[in-house]
Image (cartoon, rainbow, N blue to C red; front, side, top):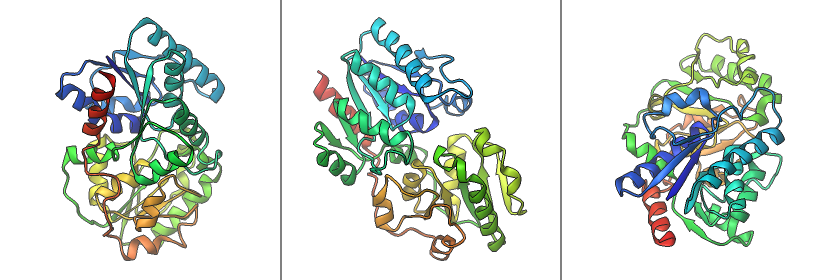
Length: 341
């Protein structure tokens, strides 16, 4: 039996294609929800079955990463001790991913890591995600990488058990089958911990870009984190529309129709490739350098005013599809079936 673990909105988005592939083949599995994005789970509940296991009350306001990680490892350990699984599937680089993976390692249960091999080679950017995914690579049994660059990172680190399958987010995009358009609005998302200290500057830059591009609306589904919410009064231009976080299909529709994107998200850089949208990456580096090399994205730090014309004047991405062909979930399940039997 396989255990599929997720805790955040992006993890559910990138694992629901794997879950649907398991269901399609009648492969026995259960799911574990860690509760990391509890407030957003309801938006995605139609994509995944009701969790068989749910870790409650591990995420508390103001807690340290040490407290959170130890709580998740302990609670996941109880589930693994009381049940027998052939493999635990985790995705990405969050505390949920690392903690459940570490607990499975201690339990001597095989681990499959979806979206393995992403690197900035700066342990403090993003923090703590870069450390989480780097440490995970050492202990998992199946490193499912999205691109050749990610595979090469692991080869350089002398990691084995590498399976290049593409990115399951392309499977998710194809599942909804939305048409591509370039309408007169920009999609904005900001949420990463590394941007909290400079969020005022980022918001002022967004405001100034909106002032320069009066012909466009700026739609900003704002993350519920108070470190983001408390500064929204800095967004004063009338063409900036702050909205509540959206259900995934509605959010994808915005990506499919927008002119270009301003974001610090990793997953959106990949979704933008499928929908052929340019991305201004509000970070100092990215673990998706293949997107930068292809002309899909541009890393701008917090300097949006100096860089927005790059995305505005030639907004349609005309490069190759670098994150796979939408068959990643099938390749992952094929490998697990073959290797676990």
